[in-house]
Image (cartoon, rainbow, N blue to C red):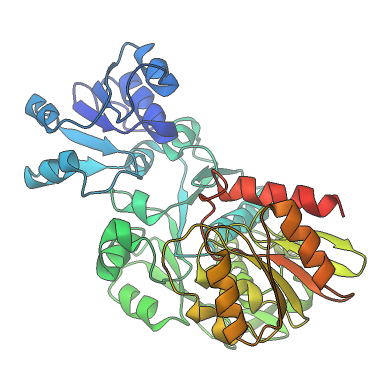
Amino acid sequence: MKNTDQFIGKRVLIVGLAKSGVAAAGLLHRLGAEVVVNDAKPLEGNEEAAIVQALGIEVIGGGHPVALLERNFDVIVKNPGIPYSNPLIEQAMKQGLRIWTEVELAGRISEAPIIAITGSNGKTTTTTLLYHMLNIGKKKPLIAGNIGTVACTVAEKATPDEVIVLEASSFQLAGIEEFKPEIAIFTNLYDAHLDYHGTTAEYLNAKMNVTRNQTTDDYLIYNYDQPAVRMAVETMSAQKIPFSVEGKASDGISADEEWIYWLGERYISTKRIKLPGRHNLENILAATGAAIIKGCEKSAIENVLSSFTGVRHRMQFVRECYGRTIYNDSKATNTLATKSALSSFKQPVILIAGGLERGHSFEELRPYMQNVNAVVAIGETAQRFIDFALTCGVEQTVLATTMDDAVQKAYGASREGDVLLLSPSCASWDQYTSFEIRGDEFIQAVMKL
């Protein structure tokens, strides 16, 4: 850990606990800061608050009182989930107070280089692929961020000969000041989280923080096939490594139907790849580019590409069952993700979809419904999804009440050679506390077949 004296005597307000708040409070306390924690939940029964209080840190619960700012803090470390529209945060911004997320802390103390992966979709798959490539390549990777342990906790213990592979959300990146990864990966950009950021421009601005502080000694791997991303990175200082799935490129990493190319030269046959889908090929190119930059041997990269079948709940292969191939894509909480899933298959699909009603349109899926032979709909949006499927010409549509019921009905609607796919296109919170629990129930139901 480096720069351990920079926080001595600094007055820091932690806003919001959860894992990142607990980690940031403990770290800053150990580094000599004067820490106060504020959490929306009441103190009674608040286990996270009790952990922090046990360290001798003051915790104020039950809301976010603006009057806290009268204490003249030097900086606020905000839980990424708390929006900037929160009255306390809004007032802090008006006062010009520095507002970070714990990712900024990680960048300031880490002795290990950081590879940061961001984008609207594909972050977790890219992060996982890269971690495995670096691990097999004996580069001593540590995984952190949304996919693993809180970033500042990992950074506190990381050594210079290790490398932190960090999945970074727009929520986290919105709160950085000096954070500078050695390698940044920008997988793609689609409209998302606009309820948090307000506009697409602000969302992009947050994402661009992954590379904004990089210099010519650093690398930026980015999606060349998206004009908005190409335009956004033009003025960045890092060495740019574009990736493209639309044919051979001489200045980055690319792919066609037969080969992955590095700097225009054949590198690995695409026949080695186990993970299906064009969107996953993009993730593979981004991860492979970073692994090459870090000095991984081709054999390590090939090992991963020939064995990796997906991240849990993200186009995860579950099993073959009586000639049906079954995939769990519970992480598909929007139409973009479901669109990517449907485009991955040429054989007929039996689709299980539906979930939390947010009023969003399914129209983006229409061109990809031609290969869907049946829809089994669940959750609050079930009837609306069925109505949409009927307008797409899907002949078999059925409502289901539980995941067990959905899997049984999907299997009943299928034939040998079909794909059974859970890709809800909706959040899970109408029936489940998380998409992970929804996906686990799907897997359990599949195993009962």
